[in-house]
Image (cartoon, rainbow, N blue to C red; front, side, top):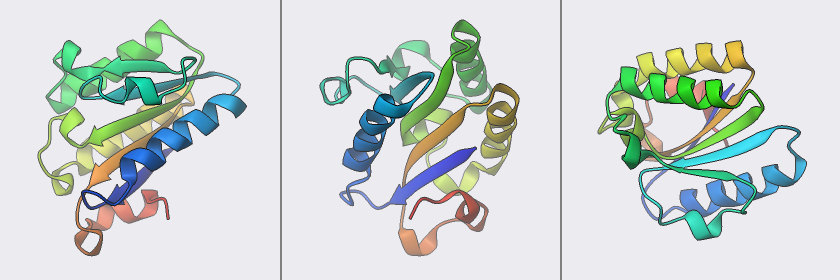
Length: 138
């Protein structure tokens, strides 16, 4: 399953995503992972959550990003939830409207490996792409 926290810059997405990850860590039966483009949120994330600085792995194209996620899951079968801050840029896109195919691939990965992806996506709430609407967190 994929869930998307969508909003404009300064709307509180980052804080909410961090709070969701920290709360999930307390209840998750498996491992929780938080992926960002840098390490600036590392100190805000509970120490039991695996923090990954994606910039160190050069997964800036959609297929490389899927490979990066698959490698992460292959290295730990107990991953239950993956929080991705700064999506879609993590997946190699500058704008959210271009990532429909990547989301479809991530959905396949999610179902096959029983992992939930929670994405933080920046964009104008009134102009969000139609394909994202089923994934949105209110």
